[in-house]
Each structure stands twice: as structure tokens, then as C-alpha cells.
Length: 403
Image (cartoon, rainbow, N blue to C red; front, side):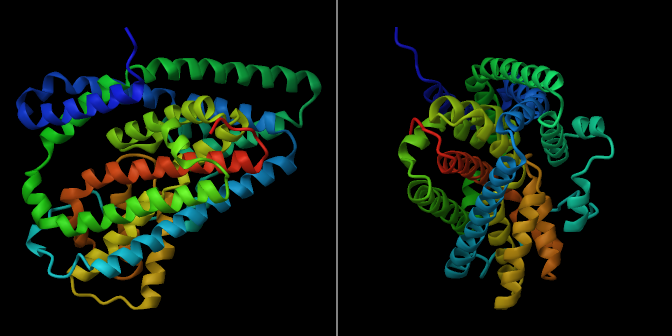
């Protein structure tokens, strides 16, 4: 009997999960553990996978010149796509104007927004960990990535004996981590089933949500679809000389997982496996670009923060000038870089954007009811952009790809 491909297994699990959550919400408690186990297993391997993959990748890159060139290309790509995403959102929200006539009585109470907001300069300083083991325990991704690049670079500066031993050690460790990842991937259909069924069961009345927040949701989704289906494929085709359709098929599994889990960090092991095995990107490129992308390249989140801020301004009758809208664009870019790759992080980061242009933080309560649904779409956009970046950069480095 022919085996069903993994991405079809996940699609089937997604559909069954939606139906189960809709028709048997009371029974979801018996199957939600599957989603919890899957997410915990993915989170368990994130730090050792990132550490081993980046150190392995940096030692294989070799010289400081190669590392600097790769780093510059990666950062330029991420800033470019995030900026394009924000401007796309700004255009759509100004055309559709979803906040005009919005029901302010639909606002919800929001907790946890009184967190201390750090300046961008402080975020940069905090990249350097005062305690690397604390950074591991707290999943501080930028600190872990900084340490791994630092460690890997100085392995290449060590003596022959130490360099050979440590390079082989981290290459072997990375190989083991990918084996563990492949095992966890097999659990994806069960995990997706449990996660989606729980989310649907816990959702408010979807019909009333669609009626009240429909235009806002439509604006966000149209912006995300335009960026995902037009902008990124054009960049992939024109700059990367890669078939966007073949690349999409190669990364279907991580995209579906990102959509289900709403976490680009949790999806990272699957993204790395798909880009390397299906696209043919080398480990030295994927291990550098993808962990960095899962942390700072948030196209979907940046776009959403811009649309949400403009929606709140329109709902409260605040007419933002062109200069203030440019502040929204710039702040959304910085906030998206600072947003951790975890569910709902964008909701907290939106307060940074609102504060920058003097909008009421209570406005977040307007968008809270539909945030979890939109979070699924914007996370899939984030992961899609990361994967496109990996193949574009790999092609620019002269690598032969399967797509």
C-alpha cells in the first residue's frame, strides 16, 4: 500500500481537528495532550539544534570574510522583505480603512501589557548574554545565536588538533539532532490534530467574530496573501532564479506546521530539514540563515503590527499624518525584530508601535478576539519568508539547488 505523504497527513489532521473542535468541544480534553506533547518535543530540541547547527555551519563557512558576506546578505534580505511587508500592509489598510465605524464596545480586557519596554539599543546590548546557560534556559534566541556564531568563529581560529576535534564533534552533534528532528516530524499529524481541535473548541463564536471584525481580518489576510503569493515569489524567481512553486512544494510540511502551532521557533527544525533535503540548500547556509530568520525575520508579524496600529487609529478617530505613518513603519520593523518566535509575541510588541505614535494601549483589546486566528497566517508567512531567504542566499553563493 502506498504511503500518504507527510504534508497530506498534516492537511487531513488539520481538517479532522477543525471538525472535532466544532462538533465535539467537550471531548477535546481527551486529545489535546497530543498537541502539548508535539510542541514540547519541538521546543526540547530548539536550543541544541540551533547551537549545533550554527557552530557546525560557521566552522564549515571558514574565513571571517565568508562569514561577513553571508551575514550581510542575510540581514539585507530580512530588512528588505520586512520593510516591503510593512509598506504592503500600510497600502491595504489605507485603501480599505477597516477601522472606520468599528465597534468599540467589542473591546476586550488585555492583561500583561504593562511589561517594561526596552529601547532598541538595550535589545542590541542584551544580545550579549551575561550567563549563557541562563540564555539557554530562557530560550533567548538572539543570545544563543550570538554565542554560537562567536564560538564557531573561534573554533576556526584554534590550532589544528582542537579545530579538527571540535568541528567533527559539532558536525556529529548536528547529525544526531537532525535524526531526532526526523523522528519528531513523524508525530506532526497527531500534534496538529490536538492543537487545532483545542484552538477551535476554545474560540469564541466564529460567525459573530467574522461579522464584527470581518473587514479588519480581510485587510490583514489580503496583505499577507499579497506578500506571500506575489512579493516573495517574485523575489525568489528574479533574485534567486528558483521556481517558487517547486520551492513551495518543498516546504509544505513546515508551512502547515507553522500555521497550526503559530510558532516559527517551534517549526525551525522542520524548516531546516525541508530546506536541506528538499531544496538542496547546504547546511552551512541553512544553519546560519534559518535560526536567525526564526528570530528576527518576521514579515507577517511586522505587516500585522502596522495594519493593527492603523486600524486602532482609525477606530479611535485619530488621523495619522504621513510622517506618523512612517514612524509606524519604522517602529513596526524594529518591533518585529525584537519579537520572539513564540505565539502571541506580536500582540505584546504592538504596544511598542502604539506608544510610538501616542495611540491608546486599550486599543489592543479591539483586536484581541481575532489575534489567535491571524497569528496562524502571519506565522506561516514568517516561515515562508525565511525559507525563501535561505534558497535566495544559497543561490547567490553559487550552490546547485534541487528547485
